[in-house]
Length: 160
Ligand code: THU
Image (cartoon, rainbow, N blue to C red; front, top):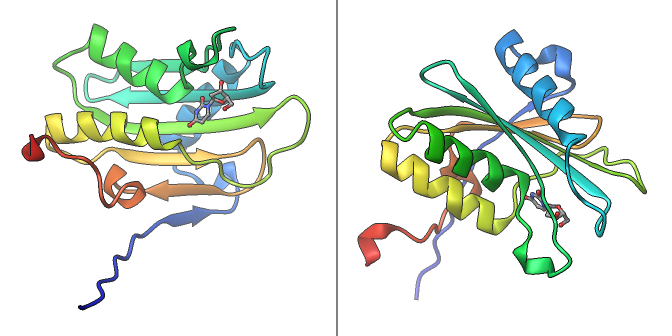
């Protein structure tokens, strides 16, 4: 038996003003679209903004359903929209923000496991990393230079 350890790396920005202006703008768009979340059940609103290599910005917010599993997270709404409308464009960066109607989220809120696997699919497809920035309603922003940092043991198409 041997043990292995895996290290992942993130950058921490203390506030929005510390971000490069392009990312600040992307995060502001994620904050704006967060208001469009349809979240009557969880009262938890998530916004995602993606910038593509064709300079288009694609947005998403979480959309819930009375049949709970039929709803979809903001990140997947955004990334599936990008794939549906711009199938040949590369996804460069994604900004994510989450805010609850019932309590203040002050720590960075990362994408859920299913969203990580979905983002991984596009990173593998395009063979270039996707930068991911995530925050709560206020507070620090974490940056991952690639989805790989968030999902070290991703399920890969090479296993099929
Ligand atoms: N949610 C997202 O939009 N993204 C995530 O990565 C985690 C959770 C949504 C799903 C649901 O509408 C609400 O947040 C509470 O789980």
